[in-house]
Image 1: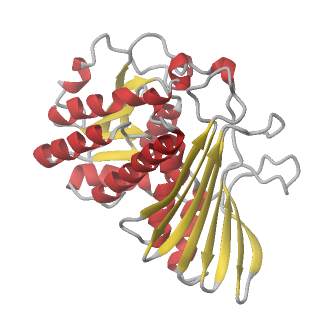
Image 2 (image 1 turned 45 degrees about the horizontal axis):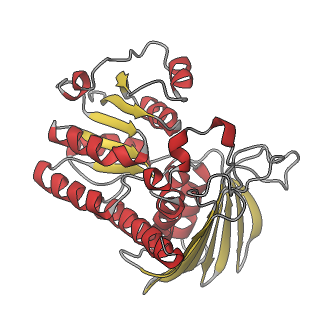
Image 3 (image 1 turned 90 degrees about the vertical axis):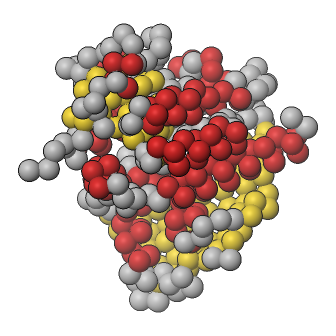
Length: 341
């Protein structure tokens, strides 16, 4: 019988840790314990979702436990690199919420420690890994349903919900910035669907368009990427309207040589009250249809478990995780330089 992956969580400042833990549990993982500083907002939800998982007073209790294989990290973004490095140096693989780091200097250090330790540094790009419709879209692309992918258009609107946000959310340097944070999802999908291993950033822009009370926040960002394999346009923002039944109408559009594919991830306002998720709109030479993809699998998590056991990279190549964060951080820096920041 295959031994289960045992994991702990360090830093629960973002509620994405709930999904990280739940998906690892769903593939047989055992959630041993968690640690965090202070009393962050997601703590109540974590305790409600995992009532029998204890909080430890010192993260060393997790790092020094030889039975723990994997550490989940969803701390304040500018703390994630140091926590991941500490965990890897204790012999743990890590899965981080995005962004996996907030500076290129941090990324360089992470690469060095991965090389030294042989541990896995994986970023849960949830807009691909936790969305069944993206899995089904990848299957269709692999089957040639739209031919060769020429371009991606990724849209990542989010609801700002100011009263519920902690102070660090409004401090751009702590989050890495909108392109490094939300934009990392879209870069991941651009590289994945085009098959590119690198890209040139041809446009990078950030702005505070409607929130002058928090001037360090960029509420709008856009970028364009080009590679021999294809091109991409990305728009991310904090302008989800109040009436939408979820936090954001995230979409991805793929243009291929033989068709188009649109992924409506979190809601589809064409269906009743808009609460239906995971719709695919496929048009090619012989098909013009809407596909309900809610039943598709989420392969990242079982593959990561196998990678931890077998020291492989089937969930996501390590080089891909590094490149996504490199491009996201470079785009953020380019945009801030254009602002004079």
